[in-house]
Image (cartoon, rainbow, N blue to C red; front, side, top):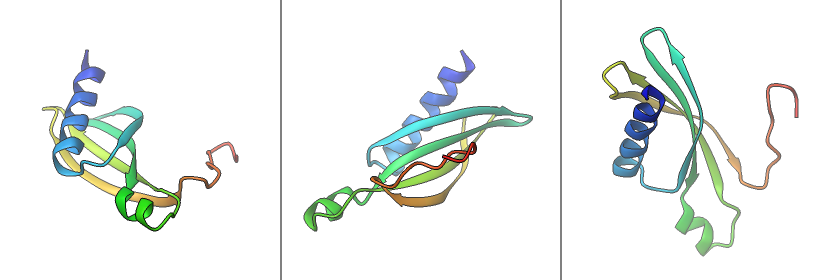
Length: 90
């Protein structure tokens, strides 16, 4: 049940504070909580207005044992159409 609780905590936080469409792409348990990766469609209305490709922000989110988001940070920004680079090289 913990993963569902962590996922819900992050979904609630991003819905309340960030608000654009987002998707949780990974959840990892750590010694003192959880680390998640979240993809966010950045500045959707601006991009649509100027016929630009959507930008995808990739965020790292930390959640403590009390299921509170304690930090989040954008790690990268890329056009949606850019090829996804994985740790395996492609």
